[in-house]
Length: 389
Image (cartoon, rainbow, N blue to C red):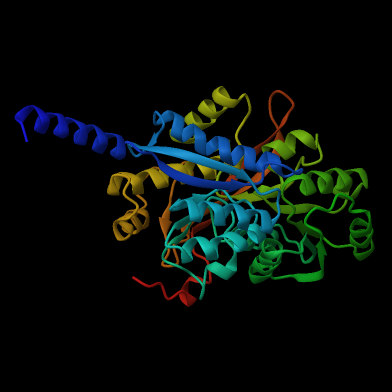
């Protein structure tokens, strides 16, 4: 081979290697973008995209490509999308918002050797005996907010409570979590439909039971309808409501007017958090999308930062699974919520805060952080997780 040909081949090979090295890491992002809950998926998608945009199209210095699909809040749709992505070779997934949808996606993803990092649901079924080394949760284990709300209900002196939640995994986890810490009497467990819009029957039953308070978990459009109907029925004046933060996020607050005034919530973060990184995120998200971020957007942004720390550690090579897994377990990133470290089941250990919706100077309702209510929360399922190394 002549010297010129050898040089030419070397240049071509280097160009090919460079192009191959620059191939972005594809991230399967399956979420709910339609149905009344579609705004949740929109905030999750946009929170993740904000982190990618701020990184110049990269996470941890590694080029990434977000492959987004709408699951329509249907587990079968999500599973089909995940199966297609697995077959196409995608090795990293996130985005699902509802626990019943997540349950349809995770088994096939981790069985293929790919990674799933949940940015919102943390169902109990994957936190204990069915934990998996390729399954991580950025947000919380589903019970967390609800166990903290049980503490809040005790502190407010409620003795007789009615609990309401949709009849799916997260709803059942909600009621189980609340019961773990609430010391009073649960007068009734009322299960609703996940896509329910009319709660007149349930509200009539609440009125007839005369509780000291209700505890309710209804995310998205169902939560908006519930809060409006609760206020319209006059129940908010006589029966206080306690709920987790995702039963009255920022978008829901805007849609329900003054229905949430005086309501207490529990969460891991709020736009009212007094930290420089959190304030900057709220400002950047508002500038990019023209709206205030919800907790879902924050969790998604945090998830992107966490993934960035893992991709940086392996230079984008997900075939180096052990190193990527080890990097995720280190959780070497600055979380907007403050504390963030992993339990043995790869779910967060973090603080939770009690918040109250009050009118701000401009007359609009806004969450006010009352105080930290739980420190270093750990879910109760971790001891049952025998995590393979």
